[in-house]
Length: 229
Length: 342
Image (tube, rainbow over all chains, first blue to last red; front, side, top):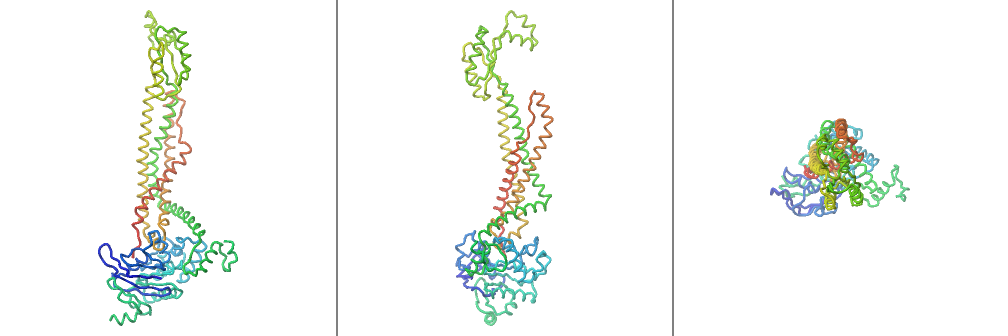
């Protein structure tokens, strides 16, 4: 689903955020991406979202080389990607329903269809009865689940999460992780950027570790913890 | 589309959707897709929603919206009002132009018969509508009656006034009149041709100057309207930064992001234009009385005419387009600056 081929990113200020990073994420797999702050996690996600472009190398999403994409292709690429943020990025001037409906409105679904799909997504994250509330009235965990519902409402083949459990206690984190694993099980490629090592340790998923822009580990979490210590 | 009527789908959905559903099943893709018809309907719906959203936002911030609209209205009503006044001036002076004539003084020794013959002949000259004979005797009587110097003239041994033919041209164009003046001066028996239209020419020159001034004023104030809208929309973009970021993250096109702001700009302009029409009409109504009296003093039948009915539509539309332009500029300038980040 995602393929990085010797991707480097150097910012205009001369900082090398990524150096020759290569990996492949297949559909239906949940993968953790970890590393210290500044190790290049955000840059990697930005390259997938085409918020940044690589200085060298190629990024392929859904078998399409992003280097060949112009700016006008960016919206269509992003519709294939569900993005979950640490700070939820919800809009507080509208209801939960309208927040989740936004990707469908943008993609051009009919009204009846939007209603069905939004309710299906909210049902999935257990917030069906809160569709008319403003997100500001929800707890942190609930807000995160609204964010997830919005990310998956148009059934994207790829789900990215940036510190999705950053502000949540372990019990809520587990709920969120269960959701992500469910999506991976139905064929979605899920990439979770986090530096929450205890979260990573609790699950046996593939782990990519970045350090100073280099991919220093790619394998299951056991290797990382035994090899790294 | 009709071929898919027999779809086994449990929920009753529209034929267009059925087609999309079928395509998706065949392709086996994970992602949801939409049919063209759906996209068009949704695109239209978004236009409608953007328009409604623009109106709601104007309504939500009534005080500041009213301020912006008033600024636009005042900026537009100034040139519009002046243009209406100028139109009136032009209409009134065109009726005055009818009084423009040439006084052709003949040599003293021309007989009355010869004078009448000349007057008749000249009627066939191009651009002469009519001629009027004023004999030396008539001139003397008129002069005595009007000037108050009757006694003085009585004392003179001879009638000092020359025979006169008044020529009424069919045009008030200065060039035509000049040509006519020269042509008549060359006629036999003509002593002097006097064109009594200098003041008409001056008036025309003044009106032309007024037109130029109004054009310049219109340009300057139209630019002001655009800038007002640019600034207002810029603030609107700034206050909706979060929304724009989210829309961009979930795949909103630039057009999708731009649309509500364009509608807002148009609404500002259109509303400003409507208020400007009201302002101008009110001002005309208010000036109507004094101007009517003024015209009556000049023996004119004219009265102040209001804006043409077409202007009532054209003004708001023109202003709406200015608003649209302002919004376009603001969006082009500031929307690119807002990009998702995390």
